[in-house]
Image (tube, rainbow, N blue to C red; front, side, top):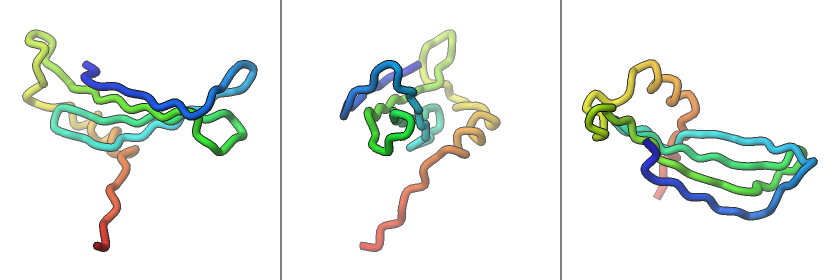
Length: 90
């Protein structure tokens, strides 16, 4: 279930331009994942739009967060695109 989403637009893109999307995971919880998606126009470095959404894995019967969290195989796959927080030197 998507519990939060937002998008920031910086510039437009229109046909016949080719859209390219980049996806990463910013945070993995026990039963939730925070994704970030960026929209680019092919051949142009500047980002056109950035969006974020939070997905919570829920129990189908109760619609409450799944007490078991997400499956291990899914977690491992998401960890492959997880952005590692940079260590502060302050």
